[in-house]
Image (cartoon, rainbow, N blue to C red; front, top):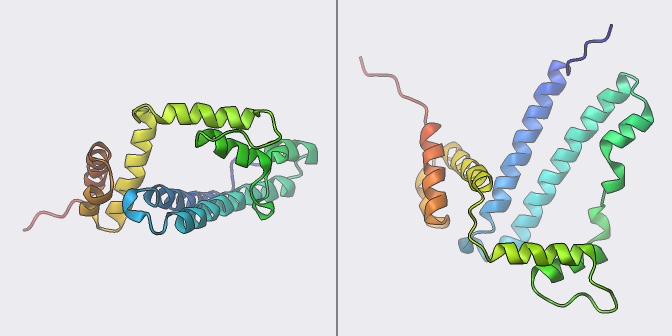
Length: 185
């Protein structure tokens, strides 16, 4: 009988790759801050696409293991959700441009009725007018920033680019991750 657990080498590769993707996603957040205005377009795209490619690699490694263990191709295709795939090589689609127009409060693209994507952008724009108080989002961002600051041994930089509430939370995360030093003898 086949072992239903993920093979250990694959599990370790998945953990390493997900950690790499998360680090890239933290950089996406970092480059949205005002002090990064000179590089935000280039760096957010670099880091977002690197994270996307890394997570795609995770999916393909797991899919290859599913094929190795003779998973039915129809089941694998449904798990991979291939109908949702969107290629970056084609560039932004009409739906992407409509979503952005709604997000930025611009009119719907000429010659089109307001689409679901446009309306979704409008809803997100309206939500952006409210304070960012979703506790799970704030906690996630604080964890990412605090972890990166601790890994880079640059906790003091948090105050220079984050809003005060976020910096305080990120500092707590970084402080919790500090490696305790042995007591002097």
